[in-house]
Length: 339
Image 1: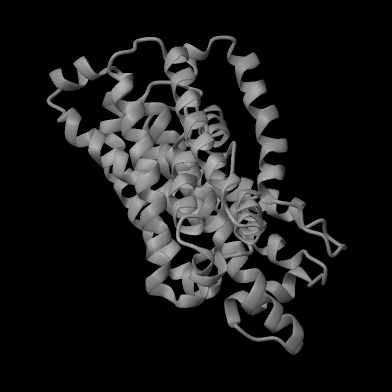
Image 2 (image 1 turned 60 degrees about the horizontal axis):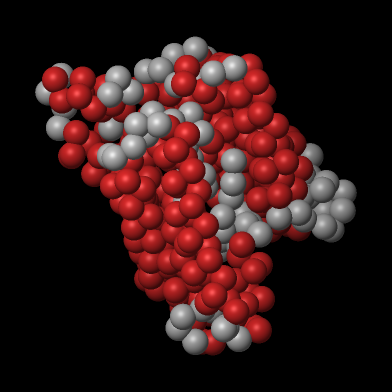
């Protein structure tokens, strides 16, 4: 199954690069990507400088958000848990707002991107700290609650409080700062320049390695913390590992691409339905592949092939992701059995 998903992801990757305002044949795209050559210099420039970095960004975002959601659903044992639903994305947004809106006009996102690779770490660090802060708060409340639905409501409320703080900040901000921040909230895969792609890829790779290292712990945590302790699992250390991984994944992706909803909640359910397993040693890589396919398909739709217009990626993922979640709820008919 993983080989089939890998082939599908590769096909979606090449198709995504071929689509856009200038259509490029699939065969020529494969030649440019794998052999770095083409007789058409314009196609070579478009693919290497514009579309390839964006497609790689889509792969990174699909892997990172999907695995982040998978970890949240296992840790909280809640099928509706995800980076957006538990307010983690809003926490990362608060970190970005602190940099963009709280440091004056010279610290806009565009200005920060022009400063160089080293300064992009500021954005990643603040977004990761914001998401970790919210996740710690939700985690501390989760220890006192037994009802998953109540926990989800608490997560939504924490996210709402975080968004309210950002809204107050926006109200007192300068118009030019506000405009750039609003554009960031729409979500975009095309705003990551090639030099900063290395930073994003490095941070997400670190988060994914931590997720892979946590696979066995996630399997045990699904059975409850008391059972996990009886099996000899160090629950506190496992929680810290999962918390760090989720914060790195969600924080870095949200910092560079804006809030992107429904990927984190929908993809883990699609993966479980397809593979019919709860073994995270298999689910983590499979979720990466399905998240990659979903993000590439969403980005291909967002480009509105044949036109100059590009839809915000967050709009497309919500349009496709929400029906998937509804389908899962109706099909399972009982959320407690959805993990």
